[in-house]
Image (cartoon, rainbow, N blue to C red; front, side, top):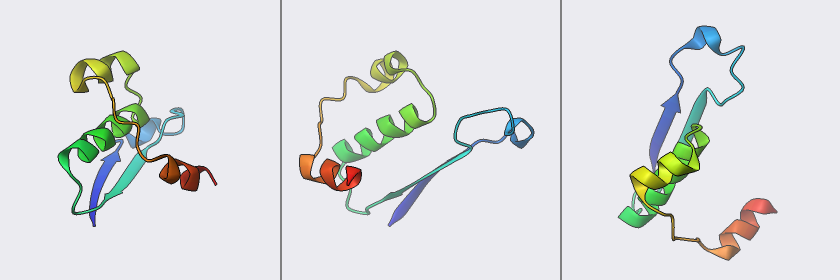
Length: 75
């Protein structure tokens, strides 16, 4: 298992910022490149980047994922 971590550096402003200060993604070691791209896109969105800038840098996200996994996540 691998971890991809985003942590906001400026801790003095954390009381006024209503965004995540730390994001940790645990990634399977056998993740293929397409799945990793989707993970990076989701991380960029979680960090607050706009849809337009994410699409410009990563391209359109055409992968829709597994509907069964989405159901498990939402249950």
